Amino acid sequence: MTEQAEMMAHLPTQMKAWQVTTPGPIDGPQSPLELVTKPVPQPGPGETLVRILACGVCHTDLHVSEGDLPVHHAHVTPGHEIIGEVVGNGPQTNRFKLGERIGVPWLRWTCGVCRYCRSGRENLCPHSLYTGWDHDGGYAQYVTVPEGFAYRIPERFDSVTAAPLLCAGIIGYRAFERANVPAGGTLGLYGFGGSAHITAQIAIDQGIQVHVFTRGKDAQKFGLQLGAASAQGAYDPSPVKLDSAIMFAPVGDMVPNELANLAKGGTLALAGIHLSDIPALNYQDHIFHEKNLTSVESNTRRDGEEFLTLADRLDIHPATTPYAFEKADEALRFVKQGDIKGACVLRIGED
Image 1 (cartoon, rainbow, N blue to C red):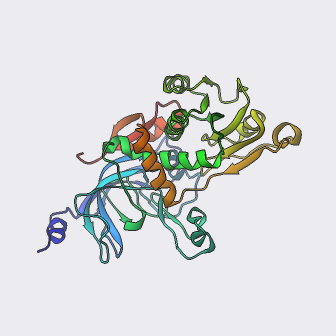
Image 2 (cartoon, one colour):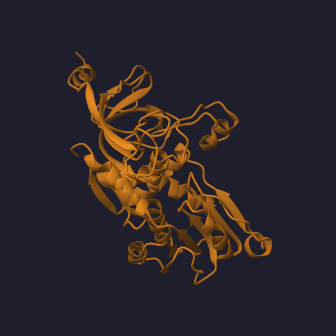
Image 3 (tube, helix red, strand yellow):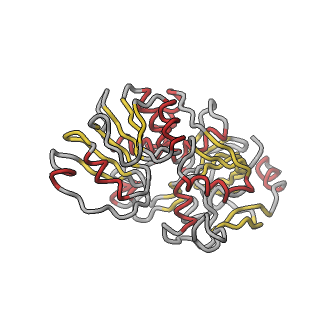
């Protein structure tokens, strides 16, 4: 018997997993999430089976659970900031060795042949699939992933610390790149949760002056502790004109003020997958002087590899609040409150 066959033979056939029953408010009278027992998934051709050690709790998980995003997979298991151990490989799968620690991200699959994939913009692939939305994700004990879409994790990061890097970090990095921050410039961060506090570290380590805009008083204090030049309310005027800004909060009402805070030629990048409606904009106040407004859609695998290399080099360490696996719904309620220090992470397996 091969090593893989022996390991697979000793795996359980059933596992614990959270699933979205009926999307609705996480803080409503009945949680949209339910902890169930279901079969351990089996890896198909080109797929790796992962025993999950930790999974970050992302704002996108909240959108999936509450129904802000349309249902793509009935009773889906959320979670896409996954760190785990390889315990099996499907047919024609050989990238990772048994026992190797890898990360499973938001982007699960792209077609590889459309105009966007062929031009290096696979994040815009119209056929793309996502972990925890189109396919069961990391609020579980096991998950499968196409081997070409997983990441090796730098050794310096333990699993709880590494988990938020798989989405909050990667998306923040892409948003940072899209925001066109000039060397030594000023950057505004709107909303200061899991993604923003990682992006702040990247910017500050590169000599960029960061200004934080968020409703949470604790989050404001946390931004200052990380080295932000200022921290104020989400709708406050900026103490300086901003060369660039990134919006992480899913609140469209904030956009006019963010554009008004930009310097001439500045760029505002909207980093979320979901945003409430943006109110009417005034051309002179919000758009004129060659200001730029752009969005961020997912990421490419190249973004992920670049970011993990940079995080390793700069020793970027997310602040984390660990939660027991059985308290996933409680963690999501905490994320919804919006005044958190860093990122919440579910502890699932032994690390």
